[in-house]
Image (cartoon, rainbow, N blue to C red; front, side, top):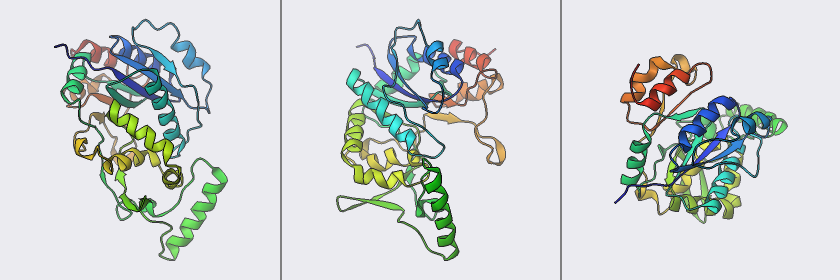
Length: 295
């Protein structure tokens, strides 16, 4: 029996149209995957549309019908993710839904990715665990990164509360009489089509639940994991298996921009995808990864 998994890639992007083009070409070259792309409403979409016009791969490349303004640590990225998830699920039936950014790239051959997801058809990949305000103190305080004036007011309020030794809110959310402990940090995930349908339905029906995350810092780190760890899919979650590789710079300077020197680490790692690829730095590495051989 042929091992075949139909994948929908949900890609959130705001910069580097040439890198996004390379990613889209790579993901759609076999016809086993379609790519749904959301471009931040704060940037001009024209360069991305031009870069992705007349793509040769058999897989489809589809821009989102709706566009949201995405700011760092804001709620807009969740809105964008669920918007293109809904678009994908309306378009076709997919075995696997994978969330990526425009600066990500596969580090394993297509056949290996297909085989991995075929062998784990009933598993949900969300690298997350229970988190608390004791670990991440910002969970005790409100934030509204999408609204500048409100965010400034909340920052002032937080400083006042901290000075008095008080907390602004619980580090958990109540839903239908049940305490949902927060799970994170998981801004990326790869879930089954069945799980994605459940998640989208939950998001659309539970606006009161969603409001908790609208008023927190970096809600995309927590929303999906929190919902699914309190669902019937909990037993299917592979929380210890991280399929996304990031090479961090020292002294909390963020993710390293990957280049050819990083090929041995990426080729030998157990992950399927990696961050951070960028035009002018990563093309040589991407060619090496595509060919599956070290130069």
